[in-house]
Length: 287
Image 1 (cartoon, one colour):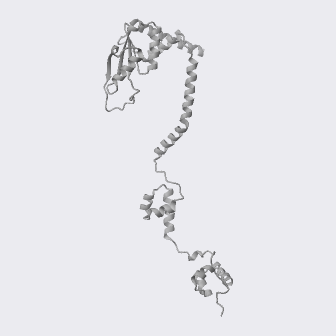
Image 2 (cartoon, helix red, strand yellow):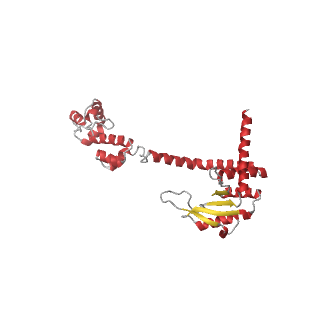
Image 3 (cartoon, helix red, strand yellow):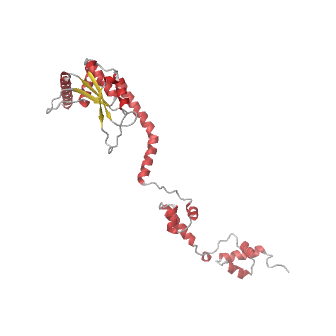
């Protein structure tokens, strides 16, 4: 006697039609009398189950909530505490989402600035160097008059000045920049100030390399360290944070011209002349 399952295609056509009508597997089994589990699944293969047969899955809700929390920026630990599920499940559910940035907004801003500077820094430095070189080359050689005026302005900016309430017409210059000192010494030479009228003294923090600074400045001005006047040591305040530290810190050099009263008056007069000439030039531009 032929098997009732012999006409598979005909049976499948019936099963598909019933599935599309919205019947469950159990209902199709009872209608067609097919009690073979594997055969029943083969008959409806490719046909989705009706929505009413799908049981709600609590893990689907957990997954949706985990994804929502991840998008809010929560870590796996915080999501685990919130939902009570394993980290492995959380990782599986949210692995396609963007990684959470745990940095604070301030940290993100600093990191972005560092990246931008790493890219733009070399270009800016090249542009800076080009501008400096062009300006340096534009100066060319200095005439005696130009050096004289530059020296007067430099002294009036950095040198000691007499006050109406305390007349001290001494010529004393102090600076930490060797280039500034070099220009100042060239200016004194232009004024024919004899080397024996110059006295040098180092001023530096007591916590720095005092001996090294003395050697540096003595070599710079072309004398022996023993010819320097007694070094002035600045007391270190432990409450302050010094930025002028390291091997490049050599303190300041004080340059004093002996019997400098007449020279001081020349400097003051020349400075007044520069101010007056600049004011007259400005007035001519406005008229």
